[in-house]
Length: 216
Ligand SMILES: C[S@@+](CC[C@H](N)C(=O)[O-])C[C@H]1O[C@@H](n2cnc3c(N)ncnc32)[C@H](O)[C@@H]1O
Image (cartoon, rainbow, N blue to C red; front, top):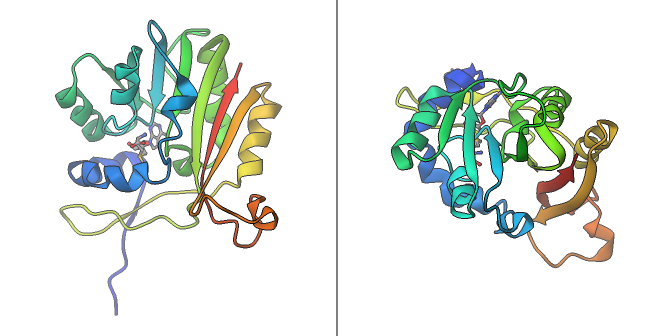
């Protein structure tokens, strides 16, 4: 009988996956097609929180754009990779659903490839709304992933708890929480789509990622 692959929560799963995570950087980038940073512009002097920061794939870019960056994650092993790469990034071990910051604190909150691990993104979004300054911005991505992929660890492959969220559901939660959606980018497998298949969720639409920029 084939061995059952263990399913772990994010904290334990990503602690085990951390040594291998950076090898997937180009694969993760391919879901964004370079569309995130141009959306953010110059971040000089901005106080930015990167939630589910992982090993710093996005945090390091935010730093280069001039931001003061705090990277938060539920996995200590993922965060320790960031500290080794750049000690200017403050790292915080915490849960996205209970952010350890005062109200109205950040100019920008980012979350790439995080909400796929959250059962109810509304809990996290409510926290983001609270810690953002008025008119602060929230950049969130939503990968089209119906089943958790196998992840490499030294003990063999594991699965990490994941949840599928439809793009209109994510947009709806943001709007219900009084965010204004400023920009929505749907990243597709192919750029050129016929109008009929361009609609998200249409058969053959081929969407792989949703990138949303919202403001408080
Ligand atoms: C797929 S990785 C993305 C990392 C990074 N944002 C990137 O784009 O490369 C997901 C990250 O979210 C973190 N994570 C999952 N659930 C979390 C939670 N409830 N609170 C904080 N971080 C969480 C994981 O530990 C992991 O580092």
